[in-house]
Image: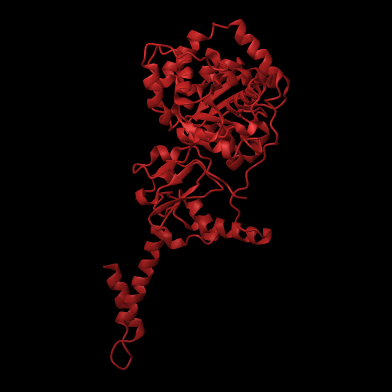
Length: 453
């Protein structure tokens, strides 16, 4: 199975510093011949390597604003995280309306998709016997479960993400109102992270995404800033707007606040998420109804494609959510009734574990290699230093049995071998023919004495 990814290595910038291999949550990176390489089967596009690389050797491959010109009618789907990028007091409707001046024909607020998904999640929690249910909103978390925690795939909420819901509603509304064929409508998500870029090419629960491309928030921010800095409000209004609670999905804890369940848990940061998922596997969280899990620290406001510091944006989003939440209009209620009546929440495909790296295609050989792997692990020092180019000793052992590394890639094993070779060379150098002097036993004794000294 082939995989596509939004994160790519820039080899010319990579210094082989091994920073990235220590921070990858799925052990998807190795350093070989002084350059990092990404194991496609394990990469979940969480962006941790982009965030941590001191040489900017990882980049996110996404769409540009110019790519919207390929379509007759274009729709912008701004993520709620974009609201926190601008100064306090900037009205969300002004940020949304600014996209019209960038060349989009329509704007659909993904916060509204979040409002709809929150309502459907409440229904799911009330009728499902699975505990805990894990949110499907963050594609990096879904991929993490598929790669590292396959036993928990059935715990993932079988509900479409807010961005896919918003995209479907936009297509339905525009086709009905404008009479434009679906293939002429270009829908672009304005994204805070690479995981959602990749979710366009490899959607969660769908064969094909309803979104045509993803444009980073960092790419449109300067253009939007020019518009919102003006005193006037753009004339056109968004197709749909979400509530303050919908905007709150951009920060950690906002999703749970929107859903309103009491037995919930919120966790952000991919390594923290992995730790919680380990507890779920052990059965320690069966009393929790719902887990909101976000790959980035702080939530979507912490995505690597944002502009502002995540702690600043989290505060701004919290203020927007609390200020706007009570303002429920009749128009919004009508939108909600119409949206909930649409068939935009059901996934087309059942989520399954993602095929990982196999030791061998032949099962019997794989079993033999697994036994060899365990033996090698016992012989390695267990320091997990990363000097070998693998994140830990077990990963190196795995690479060895798969034929991609050798034991001497470990500096400690290499030192042992060099020491043995040096001793053997000293024995050979001291050895003389019996007819010329000391015998072999005396030669060995001399070497031992020199080695001891």
